[in-house]
Length: 546
Image (cartoon, rainbow, N blue to C red):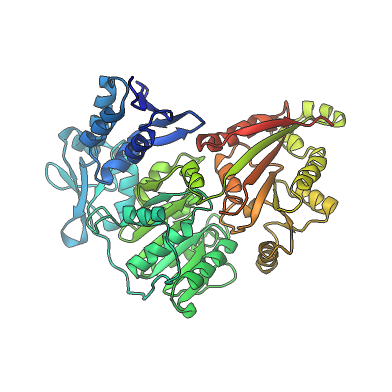
């Protein structure tokens, strides 16, 4: 019997049969050059894309090695079209080489004459490229990132061989008692590589609760240089600072917070995306961009890199000589700008399946539940006459959800519970009905942090939170999340909300989503759940008819 685990299809999807005794070996072999699409119980689906191939080649895995790995584990002969696609696409990495030139310029060498002529004829590229012979162009140093982005949009990845510059020395080491998990060490090693050209930048994908912050700290201790950390909100800024203070030996006076509340620039500085993109009007300059441009940073860490705002993309394009680390639970971007993360922050260097970490006890096992309820009769007419957006809100704020929330909270009477939603009026009604504290984006950071701390100490058992709590909130004992409404079909949000309850703990976690059936909300909920299904989580369905 042929027990090889891979079925490679002509549409470039790769099916991994988990019943094969070689499934785990095959998975490890294909992860560097393929993207996980979905991972239900028996068959996992991966896809081979140009971006996934360029990720692999940039990490030193060439087309011959990719094909060898596929042939090793494929149950059937591989379609010649797949072989051609891999060789052709992977072969493009190295056709465009960026190196140092004279007089402070950079030289872009194009190895294929056809591609060189395409660039010569491109109106988009004309403003960046200065012809330099028959196979190369000179570009200004500040245009390095912009050129890389434009080229990858044309299907041409750039092999950037310009060594990164070392930043000023900062004495920082990990606390001796800190236990760094094997996959966290592997993640940092994948970014730093051998220290040569083409290393020192990249993106690490790890599920919420798996210790992405530790990966950042290991990177900081390895490079020992001036570091800027960009986080999604002030609460996560404070969390980073706490982690740095507790898990390294650096003096607290060397750590600064640059936010709406404080403007401290120190050897280790933690800031938010919001403050960088703040301006009084669309005509004004981004006055805080100087923090990025003039800080003399040797390392920039982009926490939740999938949230990187467009203005920060632009300024990041000028910061190509700096060591860069992107951290995220998912590279899914609803705006489709994953290619810009690849070009400007760095290619995906490390990824690992969520279910694998749960099986090994590094994150909690989670059970997902969808509870469907009907729309009250007195809302049926207004729902029928409403616009698409209004229908979604009416269904999301279904008043029947309150009774269900109380029932779920009763099922988990001794556990720490988060109630998460999109609409503030709905959340305030829940908080009032059950006398539970609520956190919103307008709440003062000191009050917000105080409630989080009370929750950690189990002085509060249930906390109602708005979308402000989607990201980077460390609440390790939370084991139940009740999602009452969400941002339309956002897969990012679904992953982040589940992540609130994935910290390792002695008990399994439960993620509930309450949905109004036969409504716009039901359709969007299906899309949100797609990402979690791809990670191996299944939803059990329960209908409550009241």
